[in-house]
Amino acid sequence: MSNWRTLEDLYSLYYEEIFRYLLQRTRQKELAQDLTQDTFLKAFNGLSSFKGKSSIKTWLYTIAHHTFINWYRRETKISKHPIEKTIFLEQKTYKNPEEVVAQKAEQAQMLSAIDSLKEDYQTVIILREYQELSYDEIAEVVGWKLSKVKTNLHRAKLELRKHLCRTEDDTNEV
Image 1 (cartoon, rainbow, N blue to C red):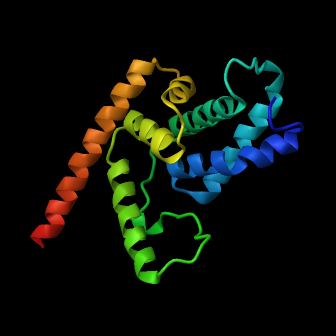
Image 2: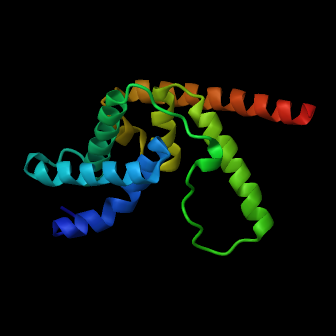
């Protein structure tokens, strides 16, 4: 049980990471906080079932992923929020205001492109590119074979490129 000794250590070590993952998936701060709490409740209640076959981090991501999927399935109709209302994580260091505006525009464009992908593609892109999980960890989290993770990630990146190129072409035409 590596770098944590108590449940509080585990919580403080991984809360921010799990929250960011769920915020990426839901785009709603309060909902992400609720799902993060649910994830840790499930983890704490099921800690005795943790066999140590994977890292504790991968196990927590698996619980978070299934918590999100269960919430997603319960929702009969997910309301897509306008990109302007998407909550970005707070800036922690000073940057030139022009750079911040340009970066936020790029983030909004990327989030819009990710939202256009099918659910499986969104999952692998977020887990790999934003949460920086390995292919093996992603396979374990979503319950797929490694080849399916790699294939979906490759196809997701191709779709993202297509979407971003179309968006760039549309912008250049204006």
